[in-house]
Length: 423
Image 1 (cartoon, rainbow, N blue to C red):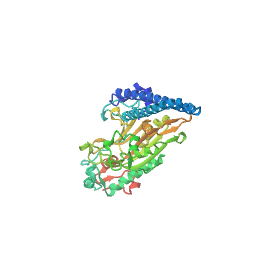
Image 2: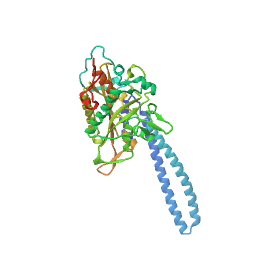
Image 3: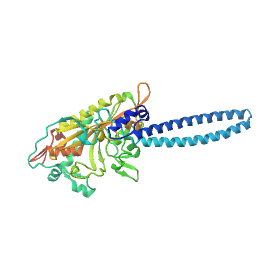
Image 4: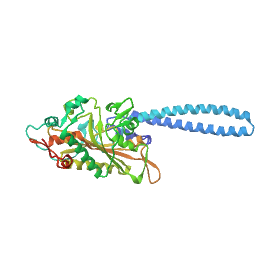
């Protein structure tokens, strides 16, 4: 959530920045400033009225002590009126504050200056590419056909048990999945991230804290009886570990990694582009996140990008990195880099990771602060990234490593799988 003071002091910059998202935010920003002015004026009236009431109460006490009962009773009537005024002002102030917060929750983060303008993913900017795209043999298969041929992923069985988008991993497919999870966690912990196991359901406050609510409630599975949400990513519970906390400046950064299943309704997703592992309702992901000092968050973002690059280099998968344009940028993000692996059998790029800096946007919602060297509280910066999302990494391995004799396992994963071939 943007800070009101920031909006007030940088009105034109905020409007121009949000224009990169193809949003004309002029009316919203003006409304925020007006509501804030109204709130501040009401607060001043309330403070003055309370001060007047307190002064009269003190005077009444003195009058009673001096025996001037009649004068005291006259002033008591006035204090009763002032108390009614205080109550009315408190109610009006609460309504203004609620209206202001409701509006602020609807305004996305302001994109970083280097975010390119654009409307769709076609306007994203490629900033890096590595790895040779393999030439496959004639008759090479897409991963959903490979999964069926070698009986390692059963999409139909998952459909029977739950529905489309809930695959069942079998035999060496399940072992490869588990190997990837362990490998990713090992790489992350070696890089200094502390592993945590977090809940797979979160409350409403956690959803609001990281920005999934009220923006994406239609994409989340909602357990209505308990008003809990199945997590769309480990980012939500892991970041909320720091909600309502004040960190010590010398203890920053905080770096966490964790594996969770992720649940997304993905309403409206149909067609060949979401076939097989390309788009699921339940999938596994290993996440990394950081709580950083504002002066160091973009240096940290670069290090996270390099970290994910290192993993993909070890897996020997051809990949590219995109800087997302304003129209494709997530609601909470100031800057996002997407990693995509090339699927040779499908002849298309598949997104496997997003690495983002949210600056103070989440921290303001979370009330996540640190005490600086002057003893004042400042908002932290939060960052997160997939390291990595498994389905499309697995799809890339199955398709790019296929041979006529079976699927080779990337060398770096063999110690984790215990086998070097699926056949």
